[in-house]
Length: 108
Image 1 (cartoon, rainbow, N blue to C red):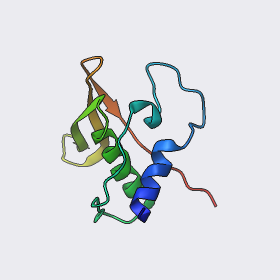
Image 2 (image 1 turned 180 degrees about the vertical axis):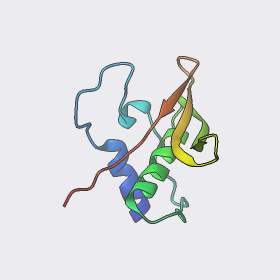
Image 3 (image 1 turned 135 degrees about the vertical axis):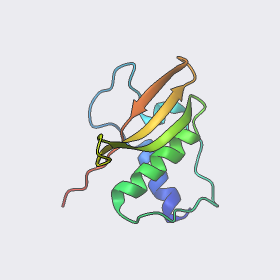
Image 4 (image 1 turned 90 degrees about the horizontal axis):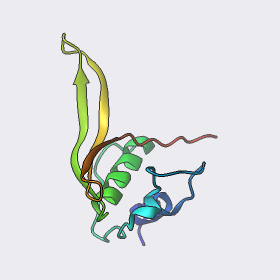
């Protein structure tokens, strides 16, 4: 198992910090398939970017969700960036779109 697969496994199997009630779910609840051996990450090495990439990969490997869009930049009327949407997903079970934000915090 390579480092990317170990991080993916940690993300998909770590317990939540608080109790989640429907309609919220943990990644572990989504019947996610393991990350393939050939999966690589060439993006920004900062932890948040890697975490978002692996969460997106996990959701792409889920039978319940389809990724409709990711990293949608939001601009004001002057074209200035005011934020971004991490993921727009289609919940296949409920046949509806969902907006998801993913984040990780690292404390020393």
